Image (cartoon, rainbow, N blue to C red; front, side):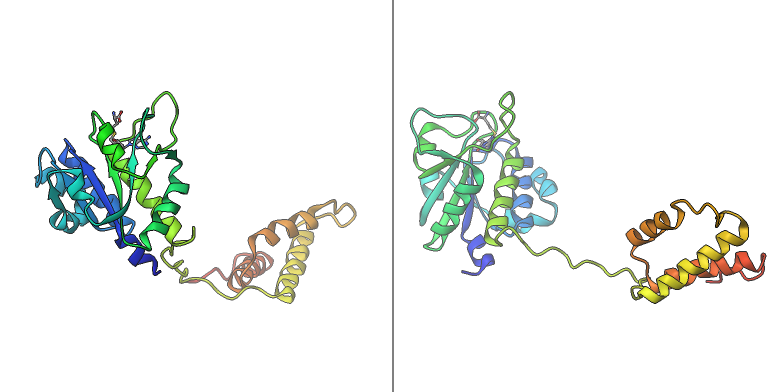
Length: 253
Ligand code: SAH
């Protein structure tokens, strides 16, 4: 199935979020990764200017967000739900790693809508809420501090979803071509430069032909790493010519 379509089948459900800022952050996190379907179960304050501010360009997701009274309502129509919890529960679905669980979530999304369910900032998900889910994820953290900010947890899971639907290679903006590039210098152009350089180094006394040492091999290494372009060879040779001619012709442009 088309990656964008699969992403559109993932609901992000926030259960009883206290801080509107986190709702905005979650919307932004979702939109950056190509998700759009946000459900809010009994948000403490929503809509709220703080949510809009934190959402910045993702206010449209907030406007379309569905506010519902229970997790059951938020999960209506879903074929699979993953509960996000930093804590181990005595009862509840098996706890998995984000990546492997997201892979399962996306294979379930072939069948219909699926959900990532997040808890309240202070108390997390209740046991009843976790029991509504078929899988659980604990984002691995430093064991001494395991609680991520709600928006950060949403971001991380949405990123995993995007990575997985695009088989670890989501498209990135095309590499801008530097407007100043010129074609790669050819072997004969580079050799012409080295001969020129060597003759100037001899003429100035920098290179003593009786004791050449490793000077030329080292310079070859240096320019080899640089992958010289034709324009660059011309500039370097221009510098050498100017040195040979005394001051004379400088670089123009
Ligand atoms: N103090 C709460 C954590 C609240 S953080 C608790 O002990 O559960 C808000 C929500 O972000 C959590 O309910 C959970 O859905 C998600 N979250 C934060 N850190 C997480 C982690 N390490 N693994 C999985 N989910 C996490």
